Image (cartoon, rainbow over all chains, first blue to last red; front, side, top):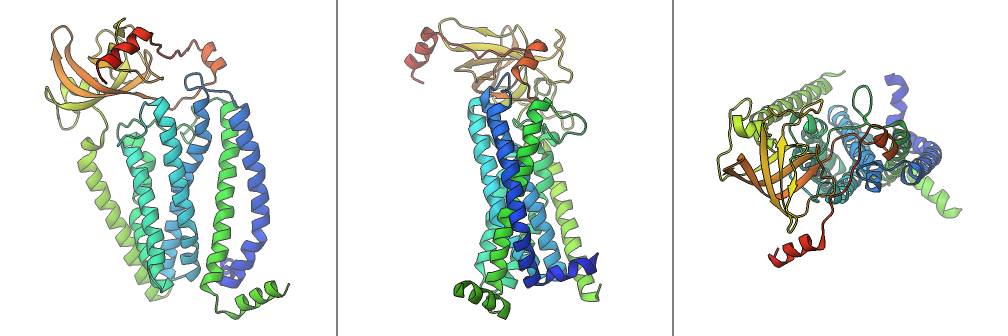
Length: 248
Length: 178
């Protein structure tokens, strides 16, 4: 497996690989997102208690679980960068951080918009909401550290340590609703066994969840490509690439 | 793996395990304080592990299910009182359940109904007819993780109606200066 993965640790190979993957990922993301969101926001039945406010679920839940998923991926990148000193792992972590921060913010904002009519408050300091807010601060810290140093290796190391320290927050967010009593409800979809919603509500969720995940993949690929170019701007292959583009 | 990488792996892994252990111990120590609310039985009997019990006059949050038939509303104002019992699965209400009465003067959230989970924020007090009660300044609805289309809910005999208010009731709130 290592032999098969090894060539991708080369920036040039990784750059061309993302170039090849991007159109496919973008097309799939567009298909899944448009099916999922139209189904979810127009055709899915409204909840008997919440009415149409329930549809925020289709954006809130994917955003929240992706905010944790991206952080976990970033932690794996930070780990391999610290242990094996892969420069590309740093680049990918730097590419992921702002995307994760954006999705955390989306989860918090949509949650507040739902909370006001349903709970009766925008915000409450319960375990789930507070730990998700801490996740946003962790992302902001990681972004700040990536930009705080001239030397990208040093920046990657500092941000990587913060990322790994912050990874304890992920299980806390996930299980906060089980470990403590909170105003936030327990999980609907990822429950073992039967999810707590009917199938005509669940299917649009599955589509929009896959759609949002693919969208995250597309944005991270775009950012990763830019990171690679920026970090290797003095290499001959990047110069050749720029020349090809400018002469065209 | 070469020895330098092995060493770095050991350092990173031990730091991770250390942080995990510290976080686990801190959360365990704080677990009672991280809970958002007391349940009715915790107010009367204290928390299960520590026996921690709120005292009269203390500001606390209470969380529980609205006991069916216990909601009484004043026809001329927004004053409302209802009883809360512990959240248990499956949901059944018995007369022997521990109940705490909540007094509130304000507009209830849309999701409020009998049998719904509620979190109320207020002062613990001793009222003559009902015993321990909460004088709430804020009532929040707790939604559970179940979502249901209206047709299915109807088939299961569930219905939800928002609490409605007459003009007279709403006027009373304005005149008291809230």
